[in-house]
Image (cartoon, rainbow, N blue to C red; front, side, top):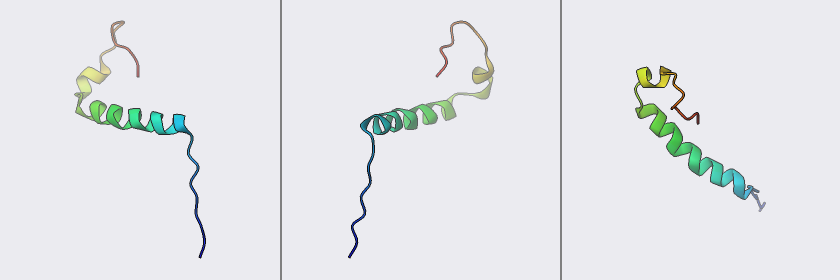
Length: 44
């Protein structure tokens, strides 16, 4: 029998937890709004 271990940095897990909802939100935003270039839009 072999043991397999997975080492994950805590920061990586937190980043992934933020990335998943961010991607889903960006999917829901219409393309027209994504293309809108304004000083009031905060880049992700």
